Image (cartoon, one colour):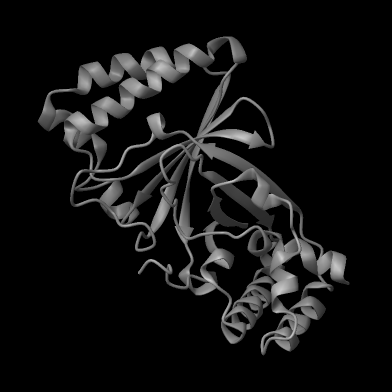
Length: 263
C-alpha cells in the first residue's frame, strides 16, 4: 500500500511549489511536473485524496520546502514545483519521513488507504529553467500564485537546431520586452524525461483576458511589430520537429502553499 500511495506523494516529496521561484545568481532552478491522468469516473475520489494529503500537511505544519501547486488540463492533474539543486532529489521519502510523529501522520495514513484503491497513470518530468528564455514584465504583470491558469507551449527540437532555436527564443523574449507584454513567460529545457523538449509556461489572469483585451495581437499591432514577430515565428517553425500548446487551470483548492520564510 505504501508503494501505491507514495506515487501520489512524489510531487510533495520533491518539494513542489506554486510558482517558479527565482534562483540566486549562479543557481539553476529545476521545474518538476508530476502528471496524473485521472479517468473522469475517478476524479472526485482522486481530489478527495489530494485534499486529505493537504489536510495532513496543514495539521503537521509542513514547511515551505514541501509546498506544491496543482494545475488541471482536462483529465490531467499537474503537480508543479521548483528546486534549486539536483541533489535535492536524493531523498524522495522526505515528505513522508517529515510527517512521522506529527498531528498529520494519521490523516496521511487515511490518504494512503484511499489511494491504494486507485490505479492512475503517472508521469514525471524535470525541466531546468533557462533565464535567457524567461520574461518577467517590468510592471503590472500577473503575480505567480495569484494567476488563474497557465498556457503551456511545448517544442520538440532536433539537436542540430539547438543553437538556432536558442537564438530564435532570445529574439522572441526581446520582442516581448519591447512590446510590454503583460504576462510572464518562463522557459525550460528537459533534464529528466523525453529529450529535446523545450517548455514555455505563460501565467495569465484568465483566458477571457488572454484571448481578449490582453491578446498578444493587440500588443503587436500597437507596437507595430506584427511583421517582425511573424518573421521570427516562421523561422522558428522550421527548427522544430513538432510543437503543441494547451491551457491549464490553477487549482488552489488542491494546492498547499505556506508562506515563504522570507515573507
